[in-house]
Image (tube, rainbow, N blue to C red; front, side, top):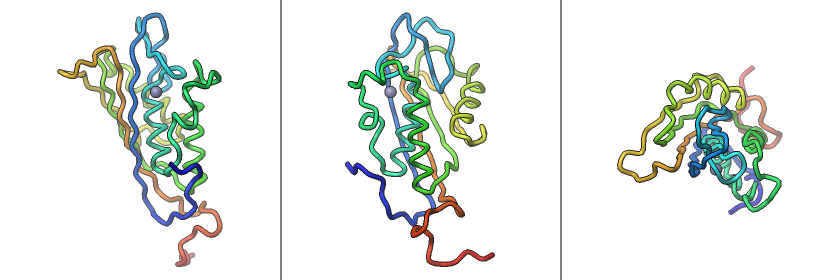
Length: 182
Ligand SMILES: [Zn+2]
């Protein structure tokens, strides 16, 4: 796995994919997409257990071939215990911007038996929109129940993201050799 950002781009578009899962546990808050949902069980594990923000983070990191979330923020490191996952997302976004890209859109699917995501979808998309500085209509959010999967005690998130090269912000030496018309 590369330890540094690639230095040669030249692709106008890049795609990223991320997925994550966390186990439900009683007595902790449930955070999905940076929003705390009213529910008796939350998601345990690494940081605040925000399965959607983790999958978005990995999709962004993957799109610029950066190390994944577990390499950058090891679960074994006590400083990330209970951490706000927005911190991870911010780091991934900075790496995307440093590589000369901006998010075109993202799409996500949550797989969980409960709670129902529909009533919270607007709030989750608004929060993710704010965290990523992209409009809510660039954020797809779908939720399914895990029919026949035997994963009722877990929440799973799949995310794809499309990045577009920023026309005027590419650092020196990474521009296309053809001059832009003025
Ligand atoms: Zn996670």
